[in-house]
Image (tube, rainbow, N blue to C red; front, top):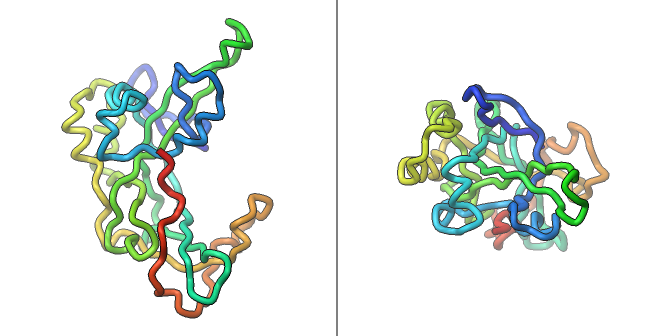
Length: 207
């Protein structure tokens, strides 16, 4: 995925990252599959994240994201596309680091990986999931990316649920369940019977 970080001159730049944080001490890259998210409530405490919160922060821009919930009468969970009401991009808060496979020797390439920070769901997300990504308002972007900002308490104050009126969602085709399917039609709204039924816990949190 692509994300925005501060370069050596503290200017925002776009870089490519592997989604799923692979700590520098990791023996294998596969640990990243268990670290796609970091909880805002504990990110300043867990050894894998605390140092990164202090010095390696990024912003993941996105048009929206998918979540799934159980719907009575459907065997497969119903996917929903969540996005800003005004159509503008979202800016998710995340952390990054670098890693390389020492088994490949000192010349092994460096892998840049990242994780997205999650927080409790707002009123919009709650019917679908009890967690959501932390979305930063434009007023917080500079502070979050500032390499000279090391105040953990100040940074944690940014890690809150989005305003209830920021997002909206609609059901989409279960074709999104396969990574082989691509195309703008995956964002099209569909009609779902009893779509307001209570959903169960989904697969957003991976920390």
